[in-house]
Length: 414
Image 1: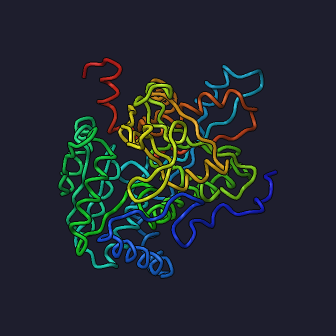
Image 2: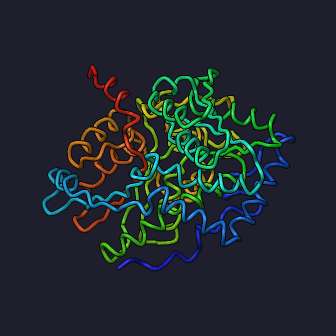
Image 3: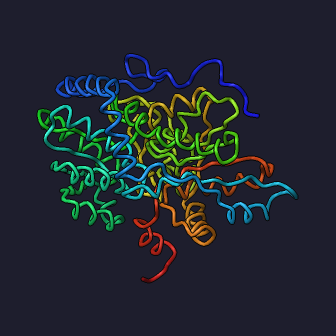
């Protein structure tokens, strides 16, 4: 039997100022504040409009292909039980959001934001992207609705995510390589924000994760919560009870918040966010685990945990995954970390590579490097748990985009 709901709800945030405890808020240029307030007002109005909800749900069903399946990974479960004490080893289940149109969870929130932008009368869309999945989703939605689209992408990520760069261009988007800093996701978001400030009248910034100034963290979370809503109903139908533990990868954290949020008030459900451990948490600049190795600060319009030096300068994050090397995390994750509702751990590049290969061989599912981090922790955790324990991880992206990068890391010549 699952325990009753927690006495105090964790699902009511943020407050009126866009804060989760001391995290979140709006730290933006004065010229941008009126537009941020306009986005907030438009979002509140849209969520109160049944026709907006109906159109978003219709697109999720008929265009994206939701609900995404829930999969019992039987071969993975049997494999991990070989290293468990006799009679032990948790059941491994996967929420298969990699089967969405465009190959990841990103399309869920993109469609909601593009519908909102159209309600606001915006004529062009900009976005940032790291691994390219958010950029592809945004370019896809803009093609569907005949909107000009510009995607800012770090030059480093342009090089290691060539398949997604071509997909964005094929869909009609302009891809702008960003060469500042480490030329990765942080720098792409910096450039997108600068561009937005200069083009506030006709442009909507479609943010890809649960970061940025309020209302973006709550807005993206709400759209992504379709993942957890479906998983909850599907698990009850398949097993008659809720999962015992949820596991999801953490970069900015949108796929994790999407899975976690509908379960936050269920006392029996433990939650684990898996950050990018890179070369190891002990190596400065060698990982992107801001909750495991950072401290609070302000970046990209919100207060959250960040990788930073003693003087408060933002450090560059590292991960084999282009989608996880952001040096911060969404503010709601920072709050959940500090109050202890969610536990945050890290998986290294090597562990993610191992999980990437094992999942491909055992389940016939090639994961993106992002959820491969979550799966790496599942592989470590499952053998320590009893056989009736249900581990549910979010398979938030497929690995088509990563096969060339993985081949290079493995020394395979294609």
